[in-house]
Length: 266
Image (cartoon, rainbow, N blue to C red; front, side, top):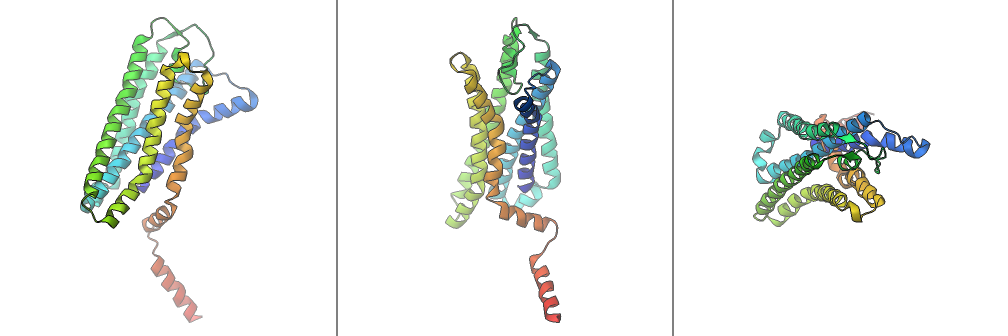
């Protein structure tokens, strides 16, 4: 689980790194210009990372499912090799799903304006500047986004329904402990999926929603998880520290005994 938490933090850091330097330069020095190629590259990185984040959340749910529903087989199933394979497969999935969307944007002609009314390059914001028929590009983007959200959301729901069903047969203390380990992950998952759905709905209601509101929802979608995740998982910093000690072979009892022996010799 701690490997996946570290991976989630790296994903959040990578996502903000793709646009925050440019955003801060724009605020400080009014360097708001960006070429179309750079915009498409930024969009590709953002979409790949955000999709990868959704998959990492799903992997964390899988980890909790195995830990609670199949505890005796946990260390045989969730090995480092298996986690690495899942991570690489998730990254490949993100690249394969997002690359066609960005590629289709390269086939669109832009003639309406050269101003993107957003602080990041997003597909819907960029397509507002296009001329001609863009219904196919919009439809493909919407379908891909809905498939990711619905499929990942359903798998996430099924995993936690299975966990809830299993905990019903546990003793109260064990049940509370099991549910407590899942609480932080459920909060993070709800926050990510809720902000994603909100951002999509706001863009669909663009005629009745101001540009400032659209930018606010985009900021919530991209920045809120990266801001809140360390706080949520920081509550468990003691458990993470103990896990790191075990990982590097640190044994408190041995060190304490060695310290006491040295003290007695003195």
